Amino acid sequence: MSIEKINAAREQIASTSAYRTLTDFFDEGSFTELDAFVKSGSGFAEVTAGFGTVEGLPVYAFAQNSDICGGALSAAQGKKLKKLYSLALKTGAPVFGFYSSVGGRLTEGTDLLAGCGEVLRLASKASGAVPQVSVVLGDCLGTNALGAVSADFVIMSEKAQLSLDVTGKNADPKYNFEHGNVAELAEDTAQAIDKARELVLYLPSNNLVPAAESEPEEPDGIGGKCIVSKLVDGGTKLRLFEGFGDNARVRLARLGGQVVGIVRTTGGKLDCKSARKAAKFVRFCDAFSIPVITFADCEGFECLSSASKLTAAYAEATTVKISVVVGKAIGSAYIALAGTGANADVVYALPGAVISPVNTEAAAFIMSPDSMNVPVPEQKAAADRFAEENLSAFNAAQNGYVDGVFAEEELRDALLSALDMLAGKRVPTVAKKHSTI
Image (cartoon, rainbow, N blue to C red):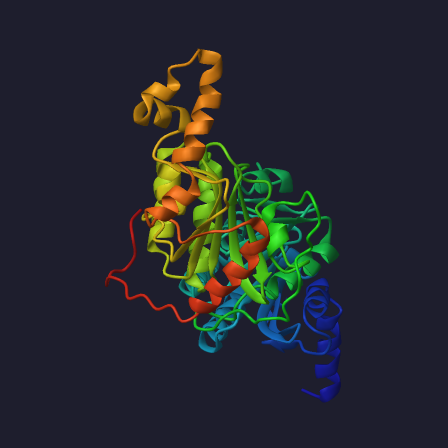
């Protein structure tokens, strides 16, 4: 083929929406396409794939091409994605997928099913080895949706659809955000790409190297903000899964320039969704050796099955784990988030924290019944006095269950010192395939 025809084919491919999506995602001039001229039927394959850098970090990415047969899944698309995943596993770099497809080329029959199955197999193989992020920009239904939600995080445009049901049932962004399928929502394609670029900065390339560090920055330190904002580097807190689970917040952030995972419970009992969200996030951080800092204020669990999953996630995690009791840590919540069940490396607490096997009123009745021999309206105040005197963080520290009690303004330095001390943590594990909890 003449160079003129090759250049004409390049121009045709470069004019598609998928190609533009990837060039917007990657650093300018860094995108290198893979299998650019692969055919699907009489035209080019319905996906553009390649590699490049984002803020200087190596990344593999693909974008389904809605300009070519609506981005329909095909055997050719499967072959291109198979090569992309294989290279990502060989070289240890994240995979970002941009989804927009009308469905599949059903005329290909079992060839289509085999291709889809092979891509899903490789994505599962890559899980925990390299980070995976899906960015849903258009229709993503049926098997396509199964591939998208298999990633560690999903970013979704408010103009897109995501559902296993090919009719589009429960496919709107709000539904997926509130059911934990989507980590972040974006107003449109441009904002979704910006969010994907931002996420790259918090991810390690693979499970053998740490995430890239940056210059430490002072916290925002703005009055009225939550304790996390007062401690982490200013402007580095990345909120995830905000629409799913109200009693726990999960974040990626930087502390002293180092990427950390933040879990903060917000008081009361942890509901089922919140526990599931926290468990999934802890497992992700553990897979890529991202330190987990837990800010515990929790009086127990509402859901037994989710409680067991969260407890197992913390107990199994071998990454650095630091727990800070900022409010109440009662019974099973203390065990799971900050005690022996969590197997925390270091446990700190604020001066006003309370640690108890049962709620403070029950503890007062059991441990000091005379102090509760007051009129019913006065029992809560009596229980609070008992807790302050007998269930404080200082009492727990005296018994060896808390490593340090710090004022809020001292906590950042304490956390930085702990991270530095634990940087070389190594923990042998029992030989097994995986847990079953």
